[in-house]
Length: 420
Ligand code: UD1
Image (tube, rainbow, N blue to C red):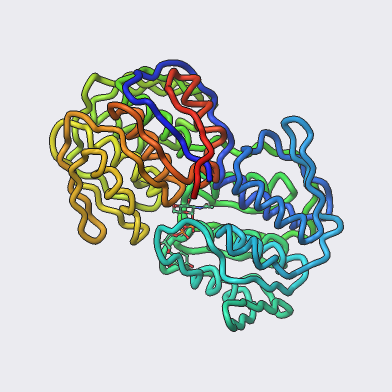
């Protein structure tokens, strides 16, 4: 096992470039299966979730090659409609493959996906969306068999704007004759990016970013070159690292237009945040001020993937604040670790009440999921003394060389091998 070791107390300063977004890269990789031609993806993030997705594509018969900054995916020889069992369990985004594989083969077999331990994460919305397109689905012993021989364009209405289900239906419908409409679609920026990618392949998708998306099916999609959008959660986490250490940080290649909710909260805590083109500049006060309330919501509300990082910030702010997690049911699993570092968090169900303390002290803690692991690193940056965060691999799922990036800003952090 690998762990991060952080010596806290350093003020972070400097400039960093934001990497490509995990949540854009994953569905875009899946969508490569929609065409037999080569796709060139520029500057894909080098994170383990993306590597796992590439392995899934290879097991289905795709060629995936990294050449410098480019990843070239060739779906010409895709031959299997069965998702590899082991990898599906490791990465939840494997569920994205359903739409593209159905589009290619009119059949798909997939096991129930895995992913972060942050809640039940059912896939009923994915399946109901595909059923609305005429897919016949049988579920048996954790295996989902999809028969798409009768697939057709259609009207899809989601009870809840699920990001993954919206993306799956967009991909499944891209080449179905006729017009498919998705009502109550998720509006996340990564869905707009997926639309950009499908359209760069010759697709006709409109409306992403709004609650109604239309997909006019085309006969075939062709190869293209595309750069996925930068990661708003990575950007937010780096800004949070600046904020918790009273630092001063500039981000380049940042998706500033998609970060209003995050930046507004950082301002509420007393940070000066300025957005200029694709740059974001943050200067933090010596002590943050607690916001009274933060509620996670689907976009354009506050993103759940930034919630636990803000929890870490709230722990050391002046005053008392409340966080309500509305998207996932189990996303306060790191409160116990933060309390061991001296925080005063009280959780009940989806609500956490935090009384800010002056400082935290280093401790030996455990990452339990991707964002929670990053939040513990943030707490470690602020804490007095040494903090060891076990299971660094969970953080590697979504942050590219996280410790190197923080070191570039002046943090004292390294990675060590430890016993499980
Ligand atoms: C995506 C993101 C994830 C982010 C989440 C919410 C990717 C790869 N992951 O996950 O980082 O935290 O959006 O912004 O893009 N739900 C159902 N049934 C379904 C699908 C979802 O009940 O069929 C529920 C989930 O359990 C959850 C909520 O809907 O409570 C949101 O899930 P969803 O929007 O689907 O998130 P993901 O696509 O899994």
